[in-house]
Length: 69
Image 1 (cartoon, helix red, strand yellow):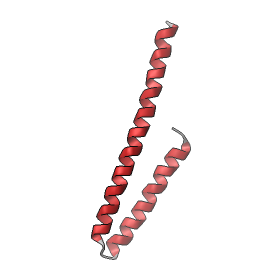
Image 2 (cartoon, helix red, strand yellow):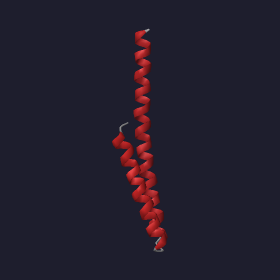
Image 3 (cartoon, rainbow, N blue to C red):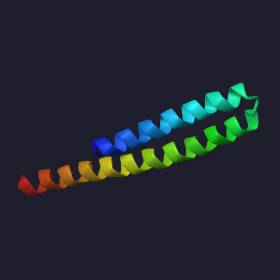
Image 4 (tube, rainbow, N blue to C red):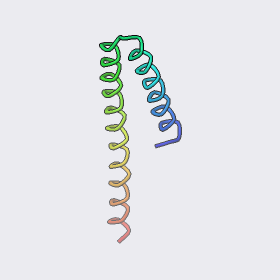
């Protein structure tokens, strides 16, 4: 995981938060809900990608650990 990945997720979170506040204040509650739902799906996909990278690193470490012993 690199800094670019973290900054991308943070940037999407900030944009979604600003749009959520905007839609809430203009009375467009349904747009606010759908925006939240789409952002939730995006964040879930990113989390799954980060977890896959994490477990690949753990697997590589254990493979190195067993082959060097």
